[in-house]
Length: 632
Ligand SMILES: Nc1ncnc2c1ncn2[C@@H]1O[C@H](COP(=O)(O)OP(=O)(O)OP(=O)(O)O)[C@@H](O)[C@H]1O
Image (tube, rainbow, N blue to C red; front, top):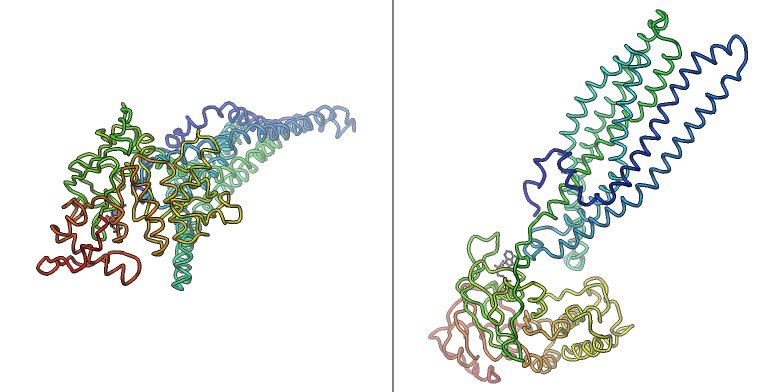
């Protein structure tokens, strides 16, 4: 979940937005030029009433008696010119800000995506995908609109109002003061509005993220929802969230409408008061009719920026929330980063792979109270295959993820060829270690691209082709050649157009293709039927002989791929040996194998059930168990 106390919550809006500086620095000259253009447009509009004042008090008054309109030509041309200048400035503003706005947006988007890719698995376990999606898509779009419009408009409105008030004070003295008095309640209301709106803006953007998460989850799990007829429940939960978002939007609109009403009402009231006072002042001869007309024309020009303040302020507060939400992610430190002084990877212990050692390893998930793994000592000698067995939830997958450093140990060390993985660059670790997960994730790309994911990009196309063909062959994934466009066929989102077994074989091919020095396979054959499993096992054995492998086994047939077996029990590796040795000496292993056999016989797929451990009575080896592991 996102942090409870949002990053930047204690900052002022200005301080929060100032953090954008590094991203907008290069775009700043054009943005400032755009702002000056917008200011030019506003000042052109403000100049028109001054011409009006001159016309009313001079040429117009004269023309009433003489009917000579020639003196009006110049002022009319000036008004026309000011109008054209205003339009030209507006066009210039749009042209200037459009390009840098989109560039800032895409730059920040790329930076965020890069950081998301860099952040460890633990971060992604904590953060819902929808929250990240809404930040990378929605928030950044909002920020762009604010940069190219809201921010500019806010500054321009502010300057226009200040300049306008100065003009009012100089042209109509007292009337200007009346108008200025109206600015006091406007400021108070705007301040109170900002405080309240900031809270609801944050709430609505977070709720949008939750909504995106629900959509993502239900689209992702559409098969399960349909199969269990739970579409209605998903809709209900979605409706609940959408309703809450709607309530927040209403709260937002209500807060906004208070300020909008005030921003309309206060200037209009001051204008009414100014009209009364102005009439007396004209009659009294203290100001001219032209000055009164100019006062109202100037106030009319200022009316737009004053009323817009509500909108630009709310845009600014939304932008501030977007900045906070962006920095919450971008400032999340990567606890699994590269070391400051990385060492180069050691030479592999043998041509058949690296030597891996887990030395007194402890691992605890950040949200767990107790460690899942404790005092784990395990060696994977170069070129050997070790099967890791244990009951469901004993921590096999977790242990396997420590080898490619997807998580860091909380104590002890994982060493590859004698070097602690935390002292290596992550790229070096992951170049040497390939993983095929139990749940094979593929990408919406071609089969070829999926298989080549871990392969050196600099290889030639022919070399890559040969690697793909061989890997598909070993993983018995020849079906890929029969797809409509062969291995160039795009396999759709997450490869869901393929069967589970097909996906698993492609994931296996991907792990093999990079010819890693260490291969970690998390139950790689679980989705295969018996015949395919045998075919894959036969070929996989050849590959395993040439590398160091750790294979998590849920089936006796997977155990049979290994030279030796490690038993994980109560967070520790309690025994390591060959299948026969362990059968003879380790009651827990005998129990596991018995369960595996029974499970495989019953369901065809060997999975541990969540059941309490019961030592086999009198610790005897069940009949024929020795034969089952004869291959080891
Ligand atoms: N990201 C996580 N955050 C917190 N706890 C987790 C996380 N992943 C797994 N766990 C917990 O760690 C324990 C071990 O999980 P793990 O997947 O490593 O077991 P396993 O032996 O591979 O299980 P299985 O045989 O069912 O695949 C479980 O209790 C699980 O709930």
